[in-house]
Amino acid sequence: MLAEVPPTLVFLVLTLVLALVTIVYIALAEADRTSAMDRAATTRESSALVEGLLLQERPSVGARLAAWLAARLPGAQKADDTPVSEKLLLAGFDSPAAQSLFTAARVVWGIMVPLTGWLTAPSGGTVALVVIMMSVLIGLVGPTAVLDRLVDRRRERIRRGVPDALDLLVVCVEAGVSLDASMLRVSRDMATVHPELAFELGQVVRKVGAGMPRERALQQLPKRTGVEELRTLVASLIQSERLGSSIARVLRINAETLRLRRRQSIEKKAAEASLKMLLPLALFLLPALMIVIIGPAIIEMMSQFGG
Image: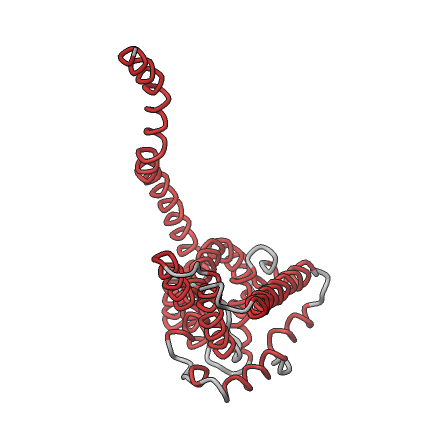
């Protein structure tokens, strides 16, 4: 099959794939570097932080590209409450351009991967069919699998930072600072250690400052993160605000509860480690150990009986 394809076309497709991979890698590396430099810049004033949280940014190149794609891709014109939009939001891609760019990436990936598999598959036979089917499967489920992985990793990072954020909120609230100012202070102090959680807290302050009710802004926090601990915390804060009870006490109790749950989760994983290691040991280590122990004796017995 590969012999029937012109070598020029194969070289062109491989060059295009390599160029796309290089562009994506450079873009991600530049984004990581920029975010790291922003988090490391601890000398900026509070007014600059408030301005970055409360003011809307100018339309970027990605937003203009998303608008162009939305007019041409059918999948990019879906509503914001679709499962894809929810997953993108949980993964941290909350810009209006996220769904359009993800749809374009799925289309490009779904075309390039099967085409590459078809061009590189051996001519004829079952191996060629398996390679083509695998490339088609990867092209269909690859972007969704990567997105699910990003959602899980971001949710776990946010879950780890919730107890520390609650401790800082307790200190600020007990010092007489309001809840909104405390969340802003915590988001600034935790920007280096837990940037995802700091960003979400800053989003809550931004929405409250824009005129949204605090209850509604807090209710959107677990929807944007998917962390069940934040859902419980938000429910407790809303109830405490309605009843007029102490917010510091609610935060302290939730922090202790979350630390207890995290310790229990670690103990559970440690207890499950021996059970999870049993299957790899039985499949890989025990056969090799038996070969090393019994192998020389079997070879000696075969040579004796053969003689």
